[in-house]
Length: 524
Image (cartoon, rainbow, N blue to C red; front, side, top):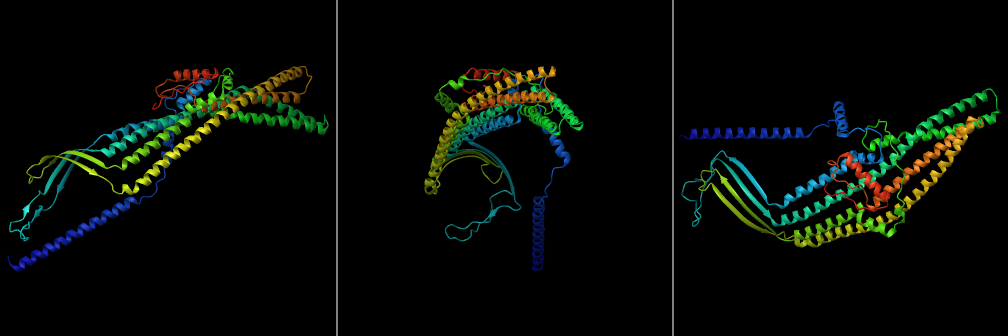
């Protein structure tokens, strides 16, 4: 080959290489610009149709598997429906299920890691190498040799187990188990609040059902009396001062009646929201017997304190947090030790230049982070500080629980006394109203006296129901402080009728003055 041909070939190869490099650079820049354009996306607000569809789906989800209320609603059924179908209660149950799933997944971290891998490699030229004489240091006179195929596939199946990872996963699994129990205690706390709200809303709904007709009748009578008084003022049948005083008294009674009607108007809506019933449903409630547990007030306060310290949900949660902090200390200590890793794998390579395409490989490695020597004191101080904080929170919670026992007991006693006083006042006003109605039939009193008597009787009965609701709320708060709730398991598996029976048994047990331990099982 002549020198000119060699130069021409060299020039052509150089031009080809420059052209290829230019194409590769252009492709790289285009790829970067494309990725940059994809990352700079504009915000996309939800469309109206998508929002409407989402609202429709959420409404169907909220009402899914919720049976309609067949007849009058009792207190037992209201509490059972709230426990089973309330949306916030469902969220707490899902949080508990999530904690249980994390615990199940965490247990697999203690197992060895088995990794299967496959790969493919391709290159444009053979992997050729030259040798250097080990004695003289001069290039070997032998021709370059090929050590690897242009394209080949690899596959391997390996088993790796780390002693340090196993120990950390073990303590992490124990912490996840305590987190499951914490989720169960938080579910108990939410259950206590829900039962308290349902009992209060139920009695407010009962008062609305009882007084609504009387309020409308008295309002109509007051409006008629006001119209008569204004007509009498126009016709000058009475003195102006007397007529205006009469109208003011009637208007004051109307104001009270309207305030009562407004207060009663939202009671059934709140109850429907708590039990996940349609908000526009016309609920009819059945008032249970007015029984209150007065025996619990006769029990020694030391017995109530001991029961609360054993069963209070918030205090039990802090105990589990203390155990989690203790496990964190053990994890810190474990990280200070050397790590021993064991591995065994089966390998395959399709490279035709290999003599053995299949082989087994085993190994062990002992490693230690020397910087752990420097960080060990700080890590131990951090772990001990975590335990100290958890202990302090537990002690503070314990003192708060003891204070709550005394406060809830006093509030329950005061609520019972207020109810008895409101009941006595209502009975007197009710008899006065009957006497006024009899005299009105004999035309011995005027319309103003009748309206005032009706208003007083209605207001006294409303206050009686309010005192009833407060007494039930105080009873629920005392039960929550003592850690008492209905004995239920998995709400998805318990039928509504059975749950209603368990709620009835729990309320009956409370009314009999018995202190029962909770039966909510962790992980359910």
